Image 1 (cartoon, helix red, strand yellow):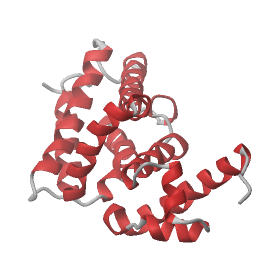
Image 2 (cartoon, helix red, strand yellow):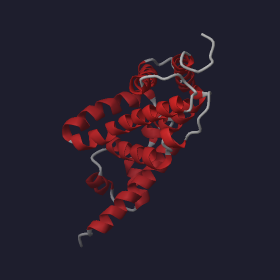
Image 3 (tube, helix red, strand yellow):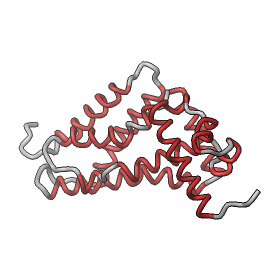
Image 4 (tube, one colour):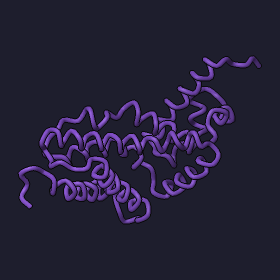
Length: 207
């Protein structure tokens, strides 16, 4: 059997990710089958694993592409306004909505797989972690814009952004750990905390 060149390999890799995105988006992580993905691409399932070690790794690759290609940077693209909580929550839903489609039980498995990835493929783990750092950088820049526009009082931008990010991270963790918490509650609780954080800094807001 003739060996395929690097360009052909890249074409197959992109096709795998394209089909996987459609399957993950329509069916969720659990119901998505690597066998069906391979079949749709026109390759054997074993060949798929020449490109991705596991379905988990494939999901993270797809999630990363979704973040980079479909999400507008919060710091540069979102219109400034006093409804800071609503603006940030809209972006949060875009960034993490895809991730929240995963069944909670699978999220735990993904967490374990992430740790394994950190050991086996540290460069891929760093790439995955970078999405969170990028989001934090965007929150920092957006906070700076709010200060410059006179919407909120002068504040130490990075710690303020870290507090907002911490509220988001906490609610995401609680969603994974507590079976009773729904996605709607994640959004509601996160917005409530962001509103509390921002309220004390809005210019002209009664204390």
